[in-house]
Image (tube, rainbow, N blue to C red):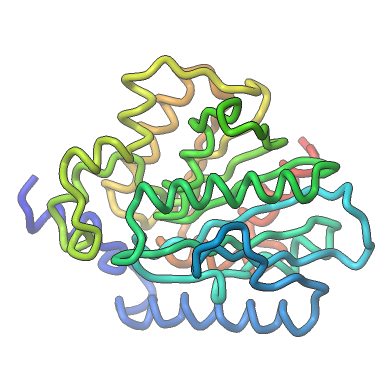
Length: 290
């Protein structure tokens, strides 16, 4: 594939169908900010909770009205190609989940150029450990990531939790429009602030790790949903499909969903809607309504 075609394939804004690229990204950011402001104004919360010593190592926790520690916890890892976005504009699902008795955690991490991919993976790992330690009576941790966040969330399947001394009570993963093989990204403008070498990309690619390492799920019953939007680029479809297939070969309880008539940005901001298909998939998975 030529450099020009790679650039197009890994530029999600070029594939939107209802807006121009700039308007799509602006809408995505605006809806995230509005949802976050609304959640902070109306929901019981703990904001900017440190899970580490770094300036960016903070998370926000939103609670349902009923005070209880034995709750399901839904953790969200924002996207932005590891270089934009923040927890302060990512509370899309707070209203829908807390209304159903689910606590929601929005994770912050150091984006590039301050943060390296190795550091981001470690930060998401430690944020997950923090939630498990702080709420040991949880009724399950459900991890969701979008785009770059799906890449970071997918790594939580592969962490050696025994070495970490904490085993999170994972009950479900939702990997939305993710990138799991970083090698093609090295040759696009996405890599400008990341400065990934091919070796960096390989080391941080869960797809490569799964294909070359004997890895088995800690809990084979834990569902892993690999999700992509109909209007994501062909490369995003290929990345999701191949990662799903690799998970299946490795013994994970994986499933694949292509969501109808949504692009890379709509697939997430529609999570503000309680009747949206992905919102319903998430709620049914948490409450096992199959």
